[in-house]
Image (tube, rainbow, N blue to C red; front, side, top):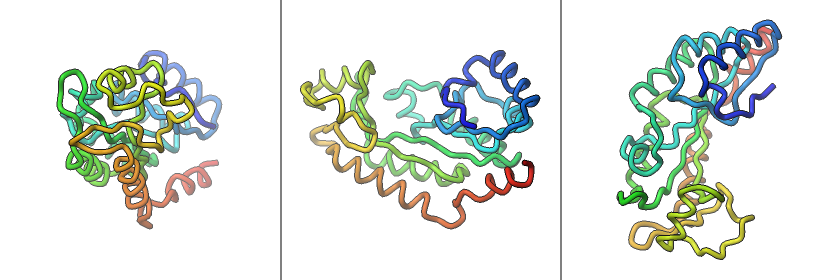
Length: 212
């Protein structure tokens, strides 16, 4: 089964209680929506594996520390993250990564460059992910990204809500990049990263068949 809560590991006490109960259930499970990586450690990964986890998704967002700190405001240490990715692989988990490219200028900081987007691709490749998903930054309703994109005129305020899709490049930053360029780059990253035979989803499936 799938755990849809992308903050299931945010409360460590609750997470450990849940995973201990899942040991009694004895079913394989996965986290396709992501996990709160900044609350993760090796002990918790061991407990997740023991409770039936066969796949884990790490929502990294960017492989560039500046982008994480200045534009996304996500409390991740990329060096610690690499260690946890490798540990998760070592204990037999299939590790998937979520990444976002195309962050515009935010909070008075310079927007993400195309070079930094390629650095994120390289980080995903070198960190040890089995598979990864790359998305164009999307100003969803209620987000600071939407309010900033409208304020700075990176997106038309009349854009219909149904267009708020991670597959569409809606944000245009004059002099830096166009949204369509970002959408095409995300598609290129997805194809190149996941096309390798060595990244096919096999180890996780075999693990489930052997155990269950």
